[in-house]
Length: 275
Picture: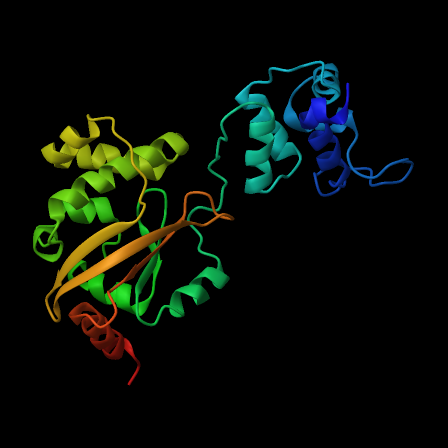
């Protein structure tokens, strides 16, 4: 069997060679070891599988590991989210993003990036469609909703949403379909399941849309705000996946050059500047 025939085994071997026993919580250090990293038996113990099973998996004699086994190996080998997703794909499985993925924390470099969008509304959404961070223009656009930053909750429970979002009906369905997509990606996310239960009880419209079982990502969108201070603001949004934080998305909404909406955003930006 060539290495190309057993890429899963090659990846497992390379990954365990990069993990020192002490980093994995194992006593004994590296004394007496002929090679660096973890032994097969140690990976098996950390993942909760038999040493024989793990050896067969690494040697390519076991071809059908379960998602639970692959998930456990990803933890045992201390894989980063991208590497864990790659491990799932090598095993022929869809990636399962666990609850320890850094979905609720916005990296400082991304926070700094938000501030560079001086003429656009930029914010970061989490899997439950909470606004985790926003630049001053986005904060100003969302200011009519006070401290609430969960967009489905705003859309379905705040009566001001109909006034602020000119395309309110479209935003309703878009938010539900995006939420259901994330529910499939993160089946163990307590925030998503709790939000679905809450809105199902509070809103017949949400229940009906959720029952559609439709899914759609937050791709390019045209949104129209009616802000109490500057009036109608038309923005085209682009959505970007935050690769090192699965579940997070960066949304950037920009007006057409020379438009009244561009002037409105410039005014909101000036109002947000410190005196």
